[in-house]
Amino acid sequence: MAQEYSFDVVSSFDRQELANAVDQTEREIGTRFDFKGVPAEVTLGPTEITLLTESEYKLKAIFDILSARAIKRNISPKVFDPGKPEQAARGNMRQVIKLREGIDEDLARTLQKKIKAVSPKLQARIQGDTLRVSSRDKDTLQEVITELKALDIPTPLQFTNYR
Image 1 (cartoon, helix red, strand yellow):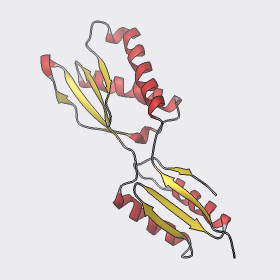
Image 2 (cartoon, one colour; image 1 turned 90 degrees about the horizontal axis):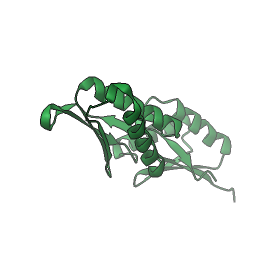
Image 3 (spheres, helix red, strand yellow; image 1 turned 180 degrees about the vertical axis):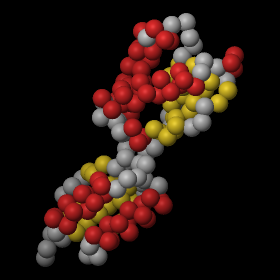
């Protein structure tokens, strides 16, 4: 009997590293000259990050700092889904940045079709917010990983449990 090889396609990030990136962002904002005397907050929630400051320009600056800190901590900037800036109390501006985690069903189906296009012998099963790909040939699985890495999708993908 031939052995079955597999790997999982997931979309996740290290929550502690994100908390560290937010903390570093807050510290940098506190030391920058253009934020002196300006209300500026970065709040990490369970599914989003909230930015609060006086103008859209400063919101963009905070988001750029946050993105740079996240990249240095090996968190893909695709994790961030920034919303529209909105008015907040006392003339400030607020922006909610949703955090993308997990593969939604529509994306999983799309990925399943792309995997089947590589080789019809591959098995791709949707398991919650992960996608399990299995085959009898390791080389085919490597081709699938290469194909999925080349895709331009808004969700970051990781490949785990390669056996």
